Image (cartoon, rainbow, N blue to C red; front, top):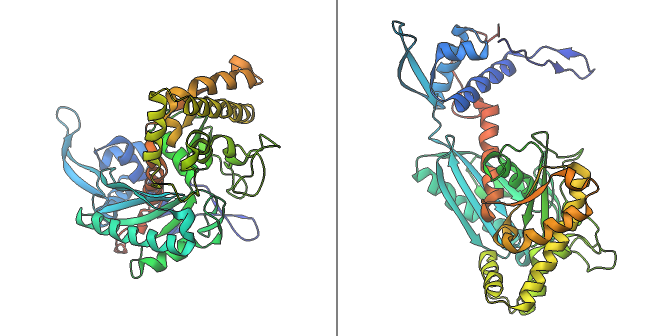
Length: 431
């Protein structure tokens, strides 16, 4: 089937045909994505499936082989007596994708190669909230350099880095506009990280952590493929990634998903954003710690460790021991989780609300009161058919989503990898 390219627009708004370079890049991406979805196949099969000329496919394949993004994997025979065809498959074992997240109390890393092989995955406890932007960027740079070294020793050099941050992010400029729980305003994170990396010339992109977590949930989580879903990060603060019709909802300026700052209690506590009664003051992990273990509240010198995993284990131990304060605090968070969830259901009508971070670790106690509150408050009642589900991606969902975004960037523009191709005679036009 022939696929047509959408024309570009000139400055005066008139439609213009795609240029040669843009058309070739689009065709390379088409072939690479086909191999990613279908696995190994012959050049002839690719031509038949994509609608490209066979000569064009052979020409494109030569460039992808040169860039090391595909490899030949033997021969296939078309029919009982057909001529054997040389098969190709996605390679990219030397091309890395580095996803990172810097949050209030940790830095998370997820590095893969283009085929999805996990090369490095770790989380480092770090008090970004207390250290300020300069020390945080220095630590992020140190961790990044070390991880890039680990990836290279595994045979892959990063083709890109995406960093997730809990706050409003101008992704086009790589600037953190406002991260209330970190105290960052107008921080040019992409430029600063590139400076920290020195001579390492790797593309750096910055995005909201909840958006990245939602992408990970949509592609590989417990509700993967659900076209309408909300993903909630259970961190010190609460962010939301919203998938509508199978696409991430970003909004006009890319600032959608700040669900933690929904006003739910006008007489409530002051939030890190400066406002009063935000949803995350009721359900964020800092709120739970203050209620369940007030001697270990965020911001106190008595806090033994900034690692959220250890704190979640302490809460879980309190629940297992039947501690009344802990049980009451978790039940209260569950009710507020359901109340805020009902607002999201009334707005977006998702089929699933996936809860991550600490929410997922305490899901057995949180989901029953949350689901009951949601069903009571949703205007459509049972007809809305939305349920809470616990994520299985842990605190690394955002970094995993960040790595997958790097892979998508490479798939969209394979020319970003490797040296410039040799001159070609075939223009790459479609049928």
